[in-house]
Image 1 (cartoon, one colour):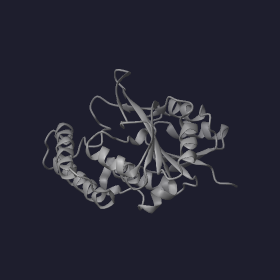
Image 2 (tube, rainbow, N blue to C red):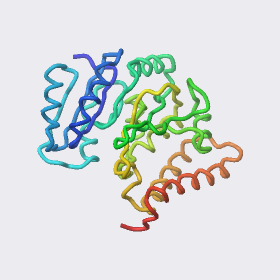
Image 3 (tube, one colour):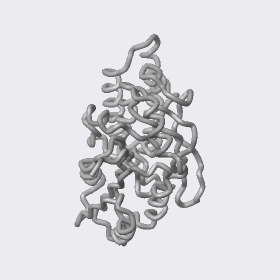
Length: 277
């Protein structure tokens, strides 16, 4: 059997009520050469039956059902081990795709720009409780290919941000950097999403492609529930790694100082200034 162009990795734990909409966004894609690697992490809400029903109708679904809950990081690692595609899209069970040409645009863009590590676009933020899109993520100064140097300086200046919910990466490039760092906790994709473009460049589209579901209590926000120390350690590591890969430029140290301030303000807001557990 030939390898698919793209692998969708999707971990689920008790998000059965969101799965039909999540799966519908995948199944309406105009680019159809992809596999859907679902790992159900011991759900108890009927999720496994929903997954099985979709898998019975479409052979692109390749589910694995874990007998007990092992946690988000363990299930994510297990899912990534099964990837066969040249490209990889990490999809959350409670998020959904809004643009039917998302995969097609990503594949076409990466064919046109073989040097690029990946593709990303705008993501809407949907409040689950209010059912309102209240903000967007995914920014860059211009559409199209962004070179490594342009990306590096733009990221440090807080003019570029790559959301995981709308990013698609070349699998080989991801493996070259050792994959995801699970020590970063819920924000395992933050480093990779900005390291790969710093090394190889990326293609950006301003078209909203996906929607990330959020909760008013912040329960699925990466820094929520952690401590200020956790956030500081995470951002220090990200800065250290990117410094080792990026191309230095005049004024970079001043930009790094502002970058730290920006993300520490964000961390203070989301951790409630909890210094320790």
